[in-house]
Image 1 (tube, rainbow, N blue to C red):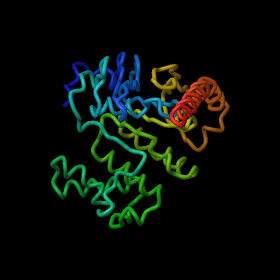
Image 2: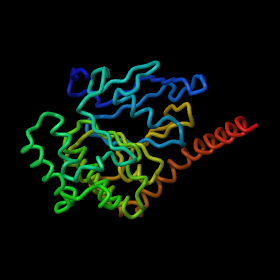
Image 3: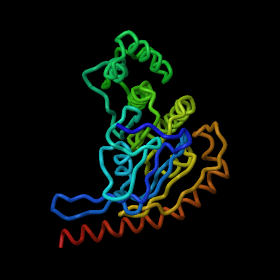
Image 4: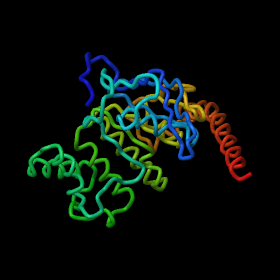
Length: 279
């Protein structure tokens, strides 16, 4: 478990000079992160972008306690990470729904696991399904829902537990463009009510800018922080509208100029790796 924060003023998440190394299946040592520093304030929405395979998901695993740093320190709510904490919610790229359970059974599972009574858990699940506009779909099963509806169930499944920290690993990447934009607005609405601290990993730069208070740009692996960009766009935001504003376009162009070099560097390294393994 995480230790209690010594001060309410401490950041929600701190990665301090963190490196993460592990062995590949062929026995070689690989460095995913090197001298990595990141701070997420309480209630802040942070997006992380970078080339494919640069260690973005590894960052989330360090925060959850699923992975330990090889060097440096990870702190959550002012204390060191000593294990997995119930105060962290995780939304994956793929839906983490039980296919044999109905929608409401999926949403109520978390509170039941945490010791809530069946009555309290299901009352709360009904409320959350209403909040994500799924009232009337309680008895359906995941295979009967569209991709956007399943993602709404996932959000209800996560927010019902009242997480202090929300980690999101490309949660909307499998959705079509139109549904994704609608989910952005849904997420912003739920987040504004909960004020959880969010780390949102994505390959979509426009998505990052539309959602975040600040955007971290990572280098090609081994990843370190190349740049941090505050997103000076007022809230509340409507993701489907702000991307046409000139400020949004200017921010997107600035960050892309920085990110593009890392994407090209990562692609060159991958081409060299493939050539080496096939030669």
